View (cartoon, rainbow, N blue to C red):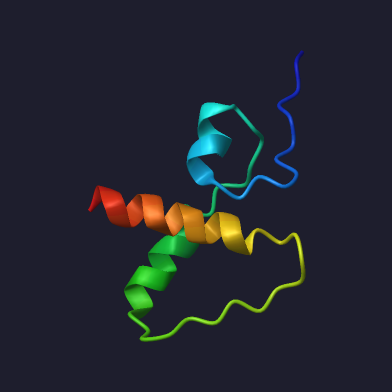
Length: 65
């Protein structure tokens, strides 16, 4: 069985999908952000917790709506 590579240093959602990297689906997190309709959202997480990747996912979702 072939394992998918980990996306170490990858912060672009499109690149992550097209290259077949392993990732945790956070679409419910995006739905929660949309439902709350906050004027400002603050993401306080340590380094390497996927903040940039989440923002990339939001850009892709926004482009599709």
